[in-house]
Length: 462
Image 1 (cartoon, rainbow, N blue to C red):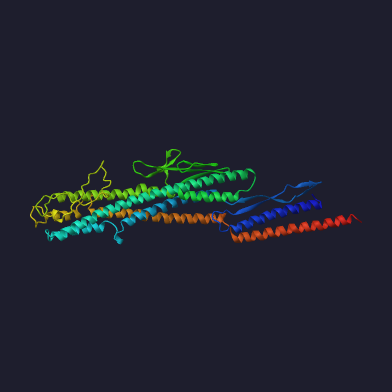
Image 2: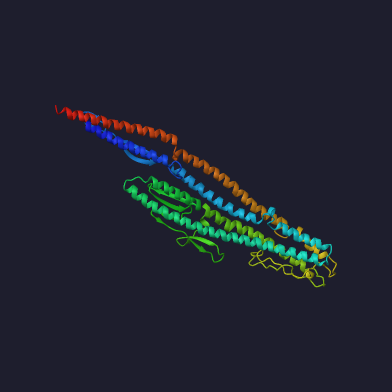
């Protein structure tokens, strides 16, 4: 190896090694803005030296491998925090829609119509026999009933829309898990053949991050090639080269979609990602608001009906129900708001009197006084409704605050990842110059060896 041909061999190895290092640096520069890209680093290895006589000679350098710079623990943290961000974004979006259904500032909600209804009763007390004022009470009652029905209908519509979001998200999960399983196969095949799979590893990590936006996941990296992915509760999604798709099935009792894996209902176990946030809004936030709305509607209807039946109309006939009566089923007030409707159509049938005299307004006063009585859970109707609005608004505020904190954490983690795996153009510019100089030097060695070889060959002719 001390011969000219040995030196030429060393120079050729150096050319190939520096060429590979230059290609790696060029690839880093090209992907400086590529999402999910982890910068690569050439690993140069000194070749095994050999003895020539009693002297040990080096045999040059080779490009052993190209490694991607990743922090596995940091990637896992990013996946976990991305799950929380996805859940909070979905939950916040849904609760903001609920909040908009009770936006009193924009004239949407129940406070205004309840106040106007009780105000119409008080206005009628000044002239109990006035048919126009009596008609105003019935109109206000219709408005009140319509507002309850509208709010209930909108909440049910919101749940239906969230149901569709779940179906769409499950389809996205299945597509991503199928793609990850295929990448597992390709990565295993490449690395099994001793080839570099960094580009596929980057692509798989991007897909895993997108998957974590949709659902809470845990991943197990088997020997750095095959990635096994499960939900945080252990439901398998990807095992080596096989994906296990999720399914949706309608609940016969509620009509809501359930998420099924291999025949098992896993809906309750999903708590993260966009699906977790949508489920929390669909199965908790919206039903809670609807239940409060039903409780208010049932209490208000029954109290007004009971007081109306205690009075007499313009003809002295005992009053009947003002609103369609509501009978709870199984101890639940479900659909009390959705079925809210006015019974009376004739203003003369409004029971204003408490003794049958047409000019008496005592029953009207009693009806109007219900506004300030504890009818629902020990609260007045308006106070109970204010509590409902506060709880919805508080949910929105808490979710918004948590999301802001989560986004801050994600930015910090992303900055840490960028410092470790991101591409620095300044650093790559230095590497480019370093490998270029090494390549040029090796090329000069080849030129020098070539010239010396010619001299040696020509010297032998004389």
